[in-house]
Length: 205
Image (tube, rainbow, N blue to C red; front, side, top):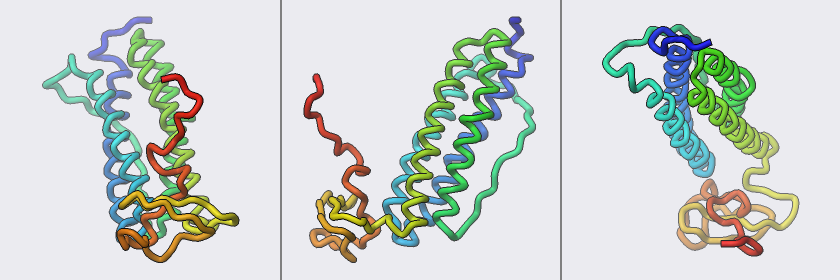
């Protein structure tokens, strides 16, 4: 079945997705600020990093609407309200929302887009759904570390990176402040979770 894009359900779903991604970006920006106030800079970084990716998702969906530039699209929808002082709860809420996009919303949007004859839009929904699963996994991992009191503590000696200056510290727990730049302990993250620290050994460049 091929339908006119101007009257399609897909155009409405694209606007719903654009609205959802835009709101997610703001929610994560707000959560990042809250984490920073609680000296959890590593969580601030996780939320900020993900917010930037949500902005890119919003742009992908928005660009699919380019032929409708200058018009208005009326939609209905429900969107989450996640206002918590507990950072772990914010992470769990974000995890839930990302999984919902992956498991339900975007896969149904992709199916409708294919049904209506818009394979490029369907591909975007499918691809971004997979990314949302990665987001959900990441939020869940950091929520678990917080809930178990292991964000800055390990059962074994571990390498930690200060996200402020790049100092590598080794121990079972991070120090109260970085011995190099004196930033508080909230800047430390397990080295294997730090950005751009993977090894190139054995890879073909």
